[in-house]
Length: 466
Image (tube, rainbow, N blue to C red):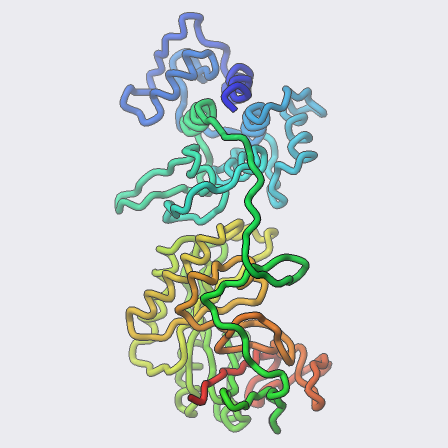
């Protein structure tokens, strides 16, 4: 690795400097760089090697930004690719074409070559280009759980900086500066990657899901619900009754259900409701209260419907998940709920550029644990919501054995491998027909549950008899 980085060091002057080469003596006399600057040693080495020049003979402009094109050139040369001739009028167009062909650019990256590049974007490109993966388990950053940021932290390429409260920050959306790129290049030069070995195949029992192996978590009990025990009651709701379990019928609602007539909902046979308390913005990161939460809480309780709540999380660190849980606890003061406070984390399309994009699965699991443990510390019952894909391939279920699971899987029966306490079996677009099969709801103005206009999620809570 050191040898191929050397080619970068000898070739990247034009990539990060717009000025003429420095004097032959290479004595660094930048008036805007001090010996106690955090990047001083790295810059001094690179300048002495003739790698980096100033913007003028006396200024370096450490806070100046680095462009997408400049970053591409440096990374590709570091990965031992040869210099690329332009393919159109822009000097970096050849590097862009190469990166596209090799799959080194994230799908959603739509930067122009002269646009400044941020820290998250350059981390994504480095990881894709060098094909490196995590080597540690530490989750250091308080402001991101991006797998790319964590990988480069493991290798010492991005170390972050501490804020006034002692939290280590990656600052993913901050444009990378000339000072920062100097440190990154210097660390790449000193990086000695071991020969890449194939990742060991996990061992143990497994089953197949979606064409992939799912290795069994022995600590979790298996799903023991009997398909023959599911029935449709007179109100059209799926129910369950066996020697081991009975059930309660439930719904989950948010502002999307509008104004609800809770008396009609109760009369229709609904026993419990999980209310959306709020959410974190996928782009802003702000916590927002669902604007129907209080009216739904009061309406459900007034009609003897048991209540729980869920929070639509977009946490990118355990610290943020703790804040979300605390937010829920604070909003629930004065209300007697008997159902759980649920951690509900779901992905958004990459086209929306969510702040949660590429969240490391280990960080996601730690967010769930942090949320649940905070909820538990206040005497509430926590719960984790997900679909089979996220339970199997994203959450580390071995770390969630102490929390009940709420499964989202739309069908009249689910073969989800593990035990779950609550099941969201329909979103209303398909309903259970008289013969017990799922049929499309073709009503233009559907009423799934009397008292609610339009679609609503339907749930079963399984209750042990012993």
